[in-house]
Image 1 (tube, rainbow over the protein chains, first blue to last red):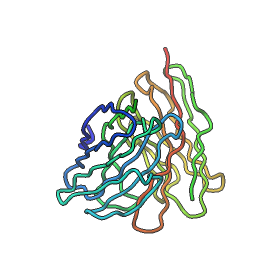
Image 2: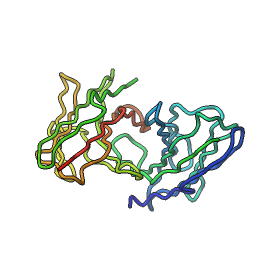
Image 3: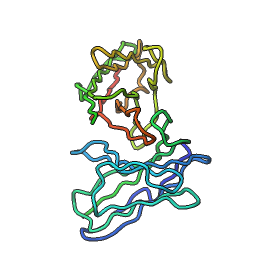
Length: 114
Length: 115
């Protein structure tokens, strides 16, 4: 158990819908990361937050947005969902926000878009 | 921009045999290097990381990796594997520049250990 929690574990929805994925970092960690794992794209970095502020951005679609709240939990919002958005979405957290800090991964949320 | 190549998508090996999982990277700047393991239906767990110093890095579960700057490689090895090592292994890089952290992952290598 990494100490990072993600809810829900599974999510099944239809095309065109909007969903919110939630992540609670390990106690004391200030940085949160979101990754997408799919069969065709592999593991891709989406976005990083540090203490409430966006720190780095990766291959995140404009239909996707994220935020980190004052209590440090984070949410990833996915809208206008397409079949290709079906994937495993991981959240990770680290103490600091720099590259040397170990990232601890949550168990993931499996999103299925029908 | 960085990229990571894991040449072997699958590596079958018998229990107690040695194994090497290959990883090559490409980057125009200095990088940190990582190996993560993903067991079925679980998140990723850090096996080991190279930040600086000794090029031979020891990790958890008896794994080690060697950083070779001239060959831009960071191969993962274990002298004797166990059935419980069956999992997906990901090599990743992160550049040193700036205050942000962004892992770029390889496509993964599925290690299948059999009796």
